[in-house]
Image (tube, rainbow, N blue to C red; front, top):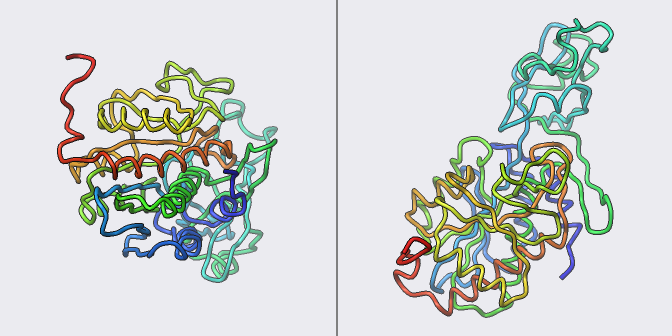
Length: 359
């Protein structure tokens, strides 16, 4: 299987910070409605199902929102102030171009920054807090700016998507449009397998901020097991210590499976067995506590066996995230194969841990 580059590109370039996911979710809808019934809710979650009368019920969730900003104030000179949607490093902003998404269409702007020469020496090399930074849209006054921009408009980094080298892609919003890509590619693969399990795949809302989308999904579906697909930090570039991120993970190394206190141990080992049988290389991430993803909410609220299958990714939460196309397709293959296998081996109580390394 080769990467469907256009599908991934369309997902990444569709703006969708938390609470404003509609353009990205529409890409998903148009893609999968030919093979599955698509539905959604007022929170912004969107999902598709294959074999709705099957058993067990496997829920796959990949969040469709991205980090971003929101316009909070326009001053008397026409400069736009903003706050963060999700975790945005203030150092990434000065001197960079952004897009303000308004009802009238996109407005380009740049985050202003005085020349280093006139910044007091003690402040050089430091980024101001996000609340003190501003966007220059070329307006001459507040009135002129407010003709183009409204308080509450969402803001993203300027769109970019390109291939760094063969099968290595760089874009904004790969966290987590790469996960959405893999989840729905997995649904397409499973749709052709005639499996016994019911598969519901969700592009969820609000993961980067409140996890509201996941909280609603847990109550709505109450599945037999849940698989969360997100991005995972790699350790294959300078400045990253593998000991601090739960192991060594690299681009091209295959899906990253999480093991630890947040996940279900029997489901983890079953996924390892399926990966081996399907000749899918995998990497393992150790988690001592929470995943800090939708998986935490889904596991707790739904009392469901939960597994994290992640796409290895460089430079997470920057405008230039990097992935390997082969990894995205490997995640999709694993999701489809694991769902098919669960339809063959599932029985009540099979996810209740009964033994382990301490027994």
